[in-house]
Amino acid sequence: MNRLPALAVAFVVTFATVVSGAAVVGFVDGDGAAPAPEIANAHYTNADLVNDRTPGEATIEMSSDAPTQTVVFDPGVEPSTDQPAGPLALLGFGGPEVTARNVRPLANVLLENGHEVRVYTPDSSRPTPTAGPSTGDESSPLGEELANADAFVTFRSDYSAAALDDIESFRESGGHLIVATEPSAGFDAPGAAALDGRLGTTSGPGYVYNMVENDLNYQRVYAEPTGDASLTEGVDRAMFETVTPVDTAATDGDVLRPIEGSQLSTTRAATDAPVLARDDGVVVVGDSDVFVPENTQRVDNDALIGNLADFLVENDREGSRAVTPQAGAPTPTAPVPGETNATQGPSNESTPSPEPRNATSA
Image (cartoon, rainbow, N blue to C red; front, side, top):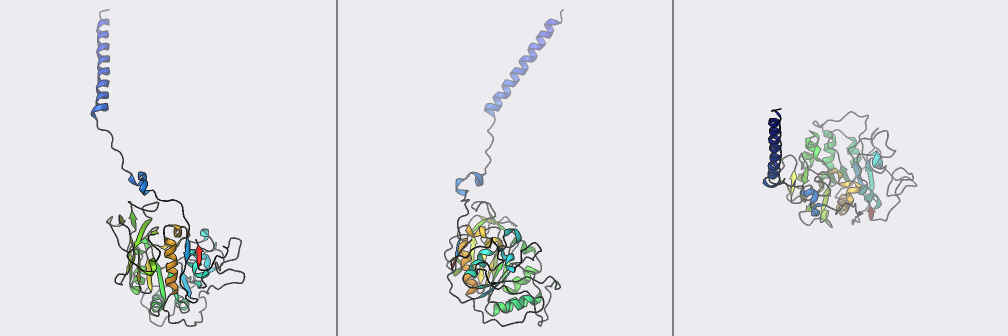
């Protein structure tokens, strides 16, 4: 019986200790501790950085009145069995689901203005070319195609030595070229370096990004003209989806540079290196996706595409020579009865209807 008072006293002491401890902890947590810091996510919360997500409209126009020119495209992708018949399918005329290279806006505006578009694809039956020394008397299927061309647009870098000779000769004879590269091309050896060496262009590994101001995400960067030039007429700002720095051997050859706040992925350092540059008859652009239809609807990309089309046809080509194609060489794309000049692709219900001359909408 004499143990009951002792147990009661122990209970009261334990209870008082728990209650007082909880009160002390609550006091410290409530008043003595600093508030949790706010996480800084300005790129999510800053209203100034939330850009227009509507695609907008693209009106691609050419101002050149040059006579009919022949423009050869090398899409840098190979045909496959699931693609519809017709070389222009490789440029996006068969729909985005059947091509890895959709440059329909540029090809379309050329066609609508009366110019001829051809597509070059290497013959898979030929031996794989190498970039080794050329003997000087070799011919290449690409050279045969360029012999009758006035301008050349390429997304490829792995050319044989004979093809590189033909590209260099084409440039020297006044042909105009657009070389579209991408960040991964900087790691391609020796293809990219060999082509750059022949054309006097450069491109580096890594991509440009901007966490301060961008178009929907940090890799979709803006670039602005460095001065007045025919390529930037009507262009206050262009957008590049994934772009790498490029340059040419020309003094003041830079045409577009990324805006302030841009950085290079490989160094994390600030960069204002050109993303589009020109050296006389050669234009190099660090993003092959700038020609994609949805990207032509951003800022002034439609004006840029129209200016590039003018550049292609305003060339100084000394005249093409007739060459009999070798067996297995690519066949030029020509209009087919019943097709419009806006597509020249396979005729089906999804073929786009012809649009007014001198303008095209992406």
